[in-house]
Image 1 (cartoon, rainbow, N blue to C red):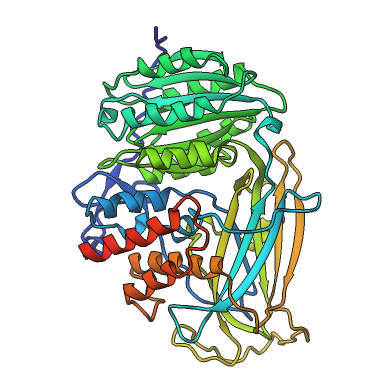
Image 2 (image 1 turned 60 degrees about the vertical axis):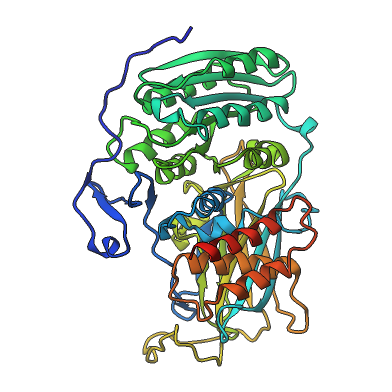
Length: 509
C-alpha cells in the first residue's frame, strides 16, 4: 500500500517565456526562464537542454590558469546514440563533448600511493587543426573490490507518472534496476519510493538478500497520473535519513524521464533544495529514461548539486554497462569535490582551450576554496580532459595577438615543462581537501597511445555535432578512420559500436 503525503504545491519547475531568434534560426523552439537560466527545447519534442557556450582560446600570458570540476557523467553519449539510431536531428546543446569522451574507459594505471587518484598526461598533434596540439589529462580512481565496499542504504525514487508508460521508460527501468538489485549483498538495505499524483513508500529497508520481495515490489509498479517530483524527493531523503548508515554508502537513486514538477520555479531553487539535502550525507544519482520529453537540463542540475552522477539509459545494454560492469563506480564514491587546475608555461604554450566542460568551469580562486562544490569520482572511474593548445611560435587564425602591456612584466621561468596539473579532492566523509601536483614535460619522440587517438576521435565527432567553429577538418570519414584504427582491445565492443554509430550518422546526414 502506498502511503500518501501532503502535496507541496509550490508551483511548476520552469516558467518559460519569450523567444530567442539566435536559436530559432537553428531550428529550435527556445524560451528563457524568468530567472537567469535558459533551456533549449528541441523542435517537435519537449526535451530540454542547457545552453552551452563553447570554450574559446585563452592567452596564457593573460590567463595562465584553467580551473574546472571533473565530470564523470556519461548521459550525453547514450542520449546522442538514441537520437542517431532513431534518425533524429541532434540539438547542439545535447552534445557535451566531455561526457562523450568519458563514456569510454582508458588504460590508465591505478594509484600507487595513499591518494585514491592517479594523474596521467600525454601530448600529440590535433587531428582537426594543422597548427594546434592536444594535451590529454587522465585520472584513474582507486578500484575497491565489491566485498570491501561500505554497506549501502539505497533509496530508489521511481517516477510512475503517466509519461513513464512507454516501453523505453518504466518497463525498461524495472529491468535495469533488477540488474542492480542482483548485485546487492545481504547487509545492504533497499527502499523504494514512488511519485505520481502523490508520493509514497512502496518498500522500506529491505535486506539485500531479500531479492524476491524487492523484485516483486518493482513488478507491481504501474504508470499513471501527474507528477509531483518535489514531494518524492523530500520523502526519499527522509527515508534515507531514517535508515542512515554511519560510514556507509547512503544514496538516493532517482529514475525518471525528467518531466516532473519539483515544486520549484527555477533551476536555482531546485539546486538549493538538493544542496540542503546533501548536508545529511546522502548522495544522489540521477538516471534518465525515454525520449520526447526527456529533461537532461533538470537531471544534470540535480545530480551536480547532490554529490552524484547522471546517466541516460536507452537500452538494456546500457543498463548492463551502468549497473553491471560499472556497478562499483556508479554507486560508490571514493573522492568528492574533485577539482583540476592547470597552469600553462608561456615559454611553451601561447594559447589554450578546454574541450568541453563548459558547465563545469570554476573561478581560479574556487580551487582552494573548500566550500565550493565540485564533481565526484567513483571506484575505478577514469576521467579524461583534453586541451587544444597553440604552441609558442605558431600562428593561428583562432588566436588574436594583443599589444604589449605597460605595467605587467613578462618574466618566464627557464624550464622545459609544458604545464603543471594541480588536483584537489576530499575523502567522502571529510570536509577538508587534499592536493596532488603533477608536472608534465612533453616527449616529442614518443608515439601517441591508442587511447589518446581514440579519445581525440570522440572529441572530434562531438565538435562536429556541435558545429564547432574551431575545427578546420570536417570530413566525417577521417574521424571514422581515426576511431576505427584505434579501437585497441575493446573487450566490451563499445569502441566498435562508436564506429558503427558514426557510420549510421553519415547515412542520415
